[in-house]
Structures are given as C-alpha cells and as structure tokens.
Amino acid sequence: MANFTTHIAVGTIVSGALATLTLAADAVAPDNLVAITMAGVLGSVLPDIDLKDSRPSQAMFSGLAVFFSFAVLFENAAKYSIAELWIMWLGTLLFVRYGLQAVFYRLSIHRGVWHSLLAAAFSAAATAVVFAYVLGRHEGVAWLAAGFMFIGYIVHLALDEIYSVDVMDTRIKASFGTALKLFDTRHLGASAAMAAATALALFLTPPTKTFVDGISSRDLWAGLNRRMLPEDRWFGIFDLSSRTASTEVAPPPVETGSIPVAPAAAPDAPSAQAP
Image (cartoon, rainbow, N blue to C red):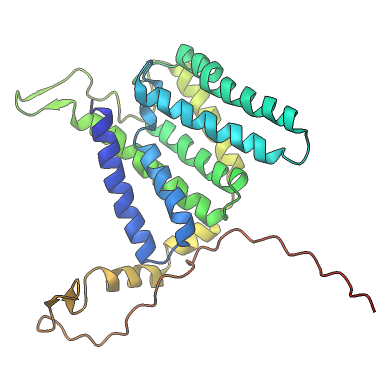
C-alpha cells in the first residue's frame, strides 16, 4: 500500500487540478472553493481511518472532534450559559476523539469495508449532508464537495492497488484486490451496515438539480475549452500569435460562480423614525 505521504501528495495534486478547473469554469464562488478542495484532500486519506494507532488516523479523529465540538458550540451558543457551553464543547471533543475512536477501532478492520467503492459513496453522500445542513452551503456547492470527496477517495484506493504490484520483481502482492473493491466480501455484516448508512445518507442529501444542471452546462464546458490554453502569450511573454489569430472575446473574470452561495438572511426592517 502507498504510505500517508504519497496519498496526501497525490490527493493534493488531484484536488488542486480539479479546483483549477472549477475556478476557471466559474462554477462556484471562490470563497467556497477552499472548503471544497479540502474535501478532496480529506478523501484521499480517509480510507486509512481504520488503520489503528496510526498518526494519520489519530489526526483525522482529532480533526473530526474539533469540527463537531465547534459545530455543537455554535449551534447552541444562544441557548445555554457559558459554563454549559464549555461542558458541551469539551464533552463533544472528548467523546469523538477518544470514545468514538475507541468504538470505531474495535469494530473496524484495516483494508475492510472502508477500502471499497461503497465507503466512497457513503463518504460523498455524508459530505453533501454536512456541507448543506451543518455548514449551510448551497445544494450545488454541497454536491460539488461530495464529488471532490469521491474522487479523492477513489484516488486513494487506486494508489493502494498500484502499490500492490511489484513492477521490479514482476509479481503481484497478496494485498492486490483488497482496496479497490465494491464492498468487503470477507465481512458481510460490516458491508451491510455500510450499505444501510449509505442509503440513509443518500436519503438526507440535498437536491441534485443545481449541481447536475451546472456540471452538464454547455457554456461551462465551452468556457473551459476556451481557457485551457493561452490565446497569444504564455505568461504574457512567449508570443503565440503566429499559431492562431485571437479573434474571440476574452472570457469574463471569475466573480461569483454559477452555483450560488447559500441565501443570506434578510436584514431586519428598519424601525420607524420618531416624528
């Protein structure tokens, strides 16, 4: 299997390439692009969350603990006292970081169900749910983040399979076929539980219409094709005018994205002026 450094490096490169295309296509507002890109990077290391006592796994649980503890804090900030909020925040942090991690390690097996296409689908659907209902992002943004997560996840599984082939000794290692699989046939109970979780996550996901309409737009793909190569000069230095005559109108600058941000709350009506 590939090590953590390889996974994070390749995942970052793939997510960066996708982010560049997304930004060039003006598909999403730039302020959403960082979170979407990080979803792809997270997906590239997430399958190793079941690797017990590993630094990547501990780091992922630490990140999840921080995320959920602050989500609980901000959600209940106006309902409870400061002392109660401290207890809720710290309790959530410790529960996810140590309690949930211990239960997860007891039930999971490395190269089991988390190394499967079924787990990739669950992670993508869960990402859409989190972006839409926890982070309050537009449904189109939520599904774009889910797509980044899914691609990052598949990149991880594919890398593990590639590293299972010893090219120098022209042999296939015993781990070949244990990463990029539909589900875990060795532990059908875990696969059934993952299938149920995936079905539940898909039931909770936001509508897909905005994302599907945006990603299938002819204008989006035409814009990407137009911006793929410079029209006259590379970096404004190397003249390419002899290669092609630039007669097209320059593409508009990236501004807000064709996938809108979540609607802002309407401001309070101004109070009536005293006569």
